[in-house]
Image (tube, rainbow, N blue to C red; front, side, top):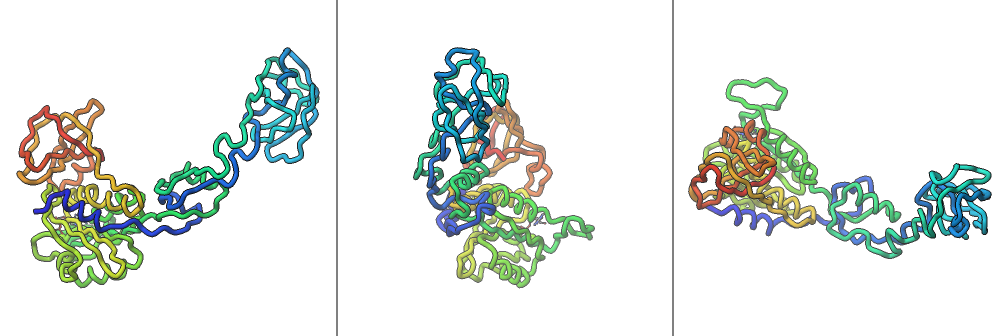
Length: 395
Ligand code: AMP
Ligand code: MG
């Protein structure tokens, strides 16, 4: 049997970051920046008012109350500005350029709000409520570095420095295929011996949560030829493929039967529970990675978390994050097979305890859905007493 770490290491040595491409800003959310973004101008580009109020010379407002004539009105976007001479004031709005001569803005709340003249009740310091040119970003300054995931705020600053398009590593396109002659689409009635296909939903959703685009193909039966056909037609749009089922030791294992002869996908027993049978390799000229996960719903989900998620990180151009663990105190005893790393389903509480859920079978999807954590039991440990400290992966 191969260790979990060796299997992951091989996967990470094989998958590569996707090639960068230039995208319109509207399509860049969730991608990873592949260039240095700099600002061509300082931000703010000009001194402007931080508040609605009156632009003044601070010295004119040192003795209060004082009444000053209002000689102009400047809104945000104004470009014809009258200078503020001694003893004068200009009504100014947030974001409007500060007129020459003025060195402070008096907030409207400190005044009577007058439009022809204004009475000001509080003295003001030089620079008050003025946002200075370049105080956010200097001209030529780097605002984002390559490798930054693009969320709403990052998208905002790219737009804020005037860019329309940006070089990014795209969201990986991941095709999810379930195999199994017993599978029926949810929404259709079950016949004898049939179950509803849940894995393609779980795995496609997990893909999307990782910042990739998931394309759910659904169930393709158990015929290796049909499976290969489907794979062939999906390969053109895939940066990676995930299959579920058909990789164990029995008969009717379409994934194993179809892919083994190609010689580019290997099937291993990985020393873990759930999820022992695992396939991984590459397909076609473009060496598209394929993750052939076991069919049991808990097994395929745990396999995704351990192996596919870090691989998708790497494809996105991010450091491949192996699942982080936290320490918790287990509330009940645990059993684990010798020589295999177990990932038991548990509920992690705010008090730092974790309770194993009832139903630890690899088919018990409802138990998984009630859990929020995986309790990790190392290979060389076969039993853990209640109250012991354990490592836990948050879900
Ligand atoms: P396999 O890995 O194909 O031998 O499947 C192992 C177990 O997982 C069997 O009990 C299957 O019925 C079940 N299974 C396989 N694929 C799915 C799926 N897409 N959704 C739910 N259960 C599945
Ligand atoms: Mg099967």
